Every structure is written in structure tokens, then in C-alpha cells.
Length: 369
Image (cartoon, rainbow, N blue to C red; front, side, top):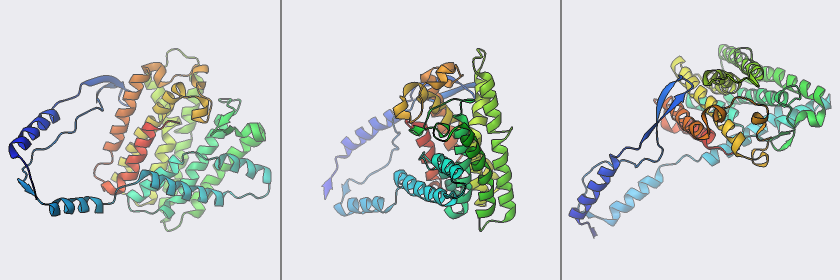
């Protein structure tokens, strides 16, 4: 049995509670989602400690029991989750895009599709599906379809007529290996097959949900989504009057739209209610914009070797970016705010089931490549 000096304990608790009530300074920045000033609280807060009563005598048995109870509660392992889901996605992609005649086009498709990558979009799709009660197997065809379309966008984005890039995921870009003509066709083939795959391979889901998911995916990449963002981005190169609202439009369409589709498809196919789907849609829009803000920061703070793609290309092309318009520090503050806003959308969901999406949001916010 061990004794506790109560007078010393109370003094210590009092000091901690005073510290817990202290506030960190707030900062004002322009939030491009609302185009109004928002308050960002510094991340370096002291954790508030609630006051509570304790017994003057603690037994070893009580201490051991508390330790056993805390150890019995399983903790979410993001590293394990990513490894398992990435492996499942890679196996599914390998199986659905096989090497067959005409070999040239399938080699080109597989070259970019199986070149690695973070698989963030498929993971978001699966996590959203599981959050609302679905399963990995239900979401997998849609997850693969989203990754095929993402890969198509990268192949086309790297072409000389677009960004004219030589490096992607640490390897020569598709057109550098297979030529511009085959690269264009490989992207086209991946786009077409994505819709075939989600329509034919999704099982155990009512047809109405599959049709709804197909419509959502199509809208996310057309003139209301990815294409809209791409064309406005191209037309904005060299302009001197691009503001935050204009930049927000580009990235909500060019980057966030497909991330939004990944999450929404998972929620729809998993049987989520209208309210659940819309909350997850808002979550995805925040992390979609977050992804681009972080991408812009990395483009000017990391090397090509660290990124696995050409660094500083936006600066060379004189494109509008968040660091260019806001500065790096304000861009980082915005990223923190977007991450918080995204995670706020998950309130009301089962915390354990929401853990993968929370971890993915944090990963997007803190990634280094």
C-alpha cells in the first residue's frame, strides 16, 4: 500500500487546473472556403486537466486493474490499416487490369496504374463504406475505379500539351516510356474501364445505388468537376489578378472533386442515409482542398527526389498557388484549419469506425510527399 500526501496533491492539481485554463493566442487568416476571416488556435495548447477527488490510499491491485483495463481496449493502428488496405487495393488492381492483347495498351495502363502511389482515394472510399455499415468487398470495385480515373488524370496531366512532366511516382512518365499517342490512349482506356468495372463488378448492392454511384463519379470528372478545374487552371497561367476565390474554384474541382467522389461513392454503396452521405461529402471537400494546399506547400519546400515528381514546376509555370498568394506560414495555418473542419464533419459517427477517416485526414495534412 502506498500513501499520498493530500496537501501536496491538492496544490499540484490547483496549479495544473490554472495552467489548463490558459489560452493560446489566435491568428486571423482569410479562409478561402468562406472568403471571410477565421480564427485559428495555435496547436501548442496545454491539455486541460479536470479536477477530481482521489483516495488517500491506493492499492497495487487498483493500479494493476486500471492498467489491465486500459491495455484491454484496442487502439487503432493507422500503419497497419494502410498496409492492409493498400495491399488489398493493389491486389484488386492487379487482377482487374491484366496483361492481354493488345499488349502495348495494357502494358501502358498497368505501368502507371501499378506504379505505386499512396492509394489515398481507394482507402477513403473503403473507409467511408465501412463507416456507414458496408464492407471492403462492396466498396472495392468503386475504389479501384476511382484509382483508375486518378491514374488517367496523371497520365494526361503529364503530357507535353498539359504540364509536360518527365517524372511521376519516381519513374519516367507514361508518354516518356510509351510515346504520347499510346499514353493518351492508356488514359482513355482506364477512364472507360473504370465505369465498366464499377457497373459489372459491384455485388451485393441494390442496382439503384450502383446507378447513383456511377452518376456521382461521372459528374466529379466532367465539366462540373475535374475537367472544369483543369481548364480554368490552364487558362489562369500567367495571370496576375488570380485571387483566393479563383484559386479555390480550381482546386475544389481539379483536386477535391475526385476525392469527394471517392468518399461519397463509398457512403452510397455502403447504404448511408442522406444525412450521412452529405456529412461525408463535406468532410471530403475539406480534405480535398487540404490535399491541394499541402501539395502547393510541398512543391516549394521539397526536392524532386523527396516528392517523386518534379518539384517547383508550378513556380516555373507561373501558376497561382496558396504559398504564392498567402505565404507558406499562412498556408500551413489554413491547412490546420481545413483539417479541423473536416474532422468536425465526423461528429455523430461511431468514433471507432470513424478512426480511419480521421487518421487519413491527419495523414493528408502531415504528408511529406
